[in-house]
Length: 274
Length: 248
Image (cartoon, rainbow over the protein chains, first blue to last red):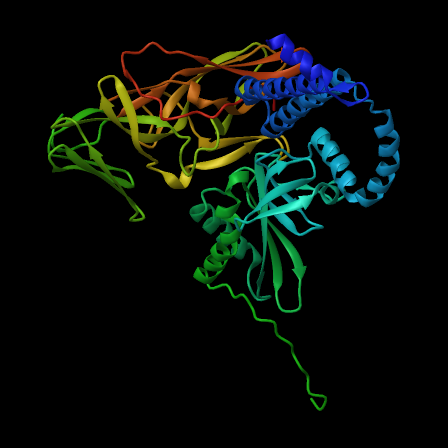
C-alpha cells in the first residue's frame, strides 16, 4: 500500500528530473534538519553557553542553528535534483543589483562580524561613544546593529558600521574610575587651607572615594576672578553615581563651612579721569 | 542570655521579649511585637534607622551577634584587604619575625535556625575608617578595602567591635634586607573567632622570596588553634584570582 503510494508520487513529474516523491523526501530532510538545528541549539544553550560570555554564546548558537539549516538545504537541493547553476547565473546578475541596493546592510554585517571578533566591549559593559554622543550599558552586539541601554533607561540601536568606525570608550574595563570637578576660590583665600578643608570633607562624607590613590588637588588656572582648583578622586567603577554627581556639592559645603569665598565673575573698570 | 540590655558581647542570644545592644556608633533593639513576630531596629550615629520584621515559627528568636570581615561597608566590591602599616617592618637577610597588626572588622547579626545561620544585618562601628584603596596601577590594579594598621604587641591591643588583631609571620628568604609596609590578601579566606567581646583572625604567613626571577611577598593563611567560637561567614564572596605582591 505504502509502496504503491510512493510509486504514484514518483510517477508525478513536476519538472524534468524532479518528482513529487523527491520533493516529499526533500521536505522530510528539511524538517529533520530543522529539528536537529533546534535540538543542537537547545543543548548548546543548556550545557555550553553558560561557560561562554553572553554575546559569544548567542552568536555561536545562531551559527550552529543556521549552519545546520544551510547544510539541510544543500542536501535537500541535491536530493531533489534541483539544478542551481541557472539560479547562480541569474543570482550573479541579481546579486550585483542587490549589492548596490544593500551596500549599508552588507557593511553593517561585515562590521558586526569584526566587532564580534575584536570584542572592543562585552555585553553588560558600560561604554561611551563620544562621537555619537551615546553612553550606556551594552545590551548586545547582533548581526547588523548593537543595542545600548542609555543611563536614562531608554535603549538605542546603533548600526554596526557606525560603531566600528567610531572611538569606543570603555567605562568598566578597570576596577576603578576617576571623577573630576573644578572649583574656583577667591584670590585672597589661602589655597592650602581650602585644599585641606575640601579633602577632609570628601573623606568624611564620601565613603566610595578611595584612600589610595588619595584625592588629588591641582591648581588648574589663575583665572579672571578666581583661582581654579581641579579635584580628582578615584572610586570603584560601579559607584560613579555615588561620587561624581555629589562631588561639587560636598566641595561647596566644605568651602562654605570654612568661610572660603567662591567668587562671582567680576570686572574692575577704571574711570579714565582717575 | 535572655531578654535584657546587655553589655555588648558576641554570642548567641535567645530572645523571648526584647533585647538591646549598645555598640560604638550603633544601637540595636529586637522586640517581640506579636505572637511569633519580632522587630529588629538599628540606629546609627547619623540617625539612620534600619528596620526589619522577623516572623518566627517559635515563641523565641535565636540570633547570633558575631564579627564579620570588613568587606561590606559602604558596599561589597572586593574580597581583598590592604593593611597599610603605620610603621614599616624591616627584615634583614634570612630574618624571621612574628608581629601583630590591627585589622578592621564589621558586625554581623544572624538569625539562627537549627544549624542554619541567615544574615539579618551588618554594620560598621567605625564607618569613617571603612575605605577602599587600590593596590597597583589604575589600569590593572586590585580594588581592596584599605586600612591604616598599627603594629601592636599582642592580641589584646584592639578596640572592641571596631578592629581586631592578626598575627603575621614574616620571613625573608631574599639575599638582602627589605621593608614590609603593607600586606594585601583575600581576607574572606581567613576565619574569624570570637569570645565575649574579643575576636581574632587566622594568622598570615608572609614570605619574601624569589619566584623565577621576580622578588615577591608570598602571603598565605595559617590556621590558628583556638577554643574560641568560629564566626559565621557573611553572605556571598566575590570570585577573585590569587595575586603575588611586589616587594617594596
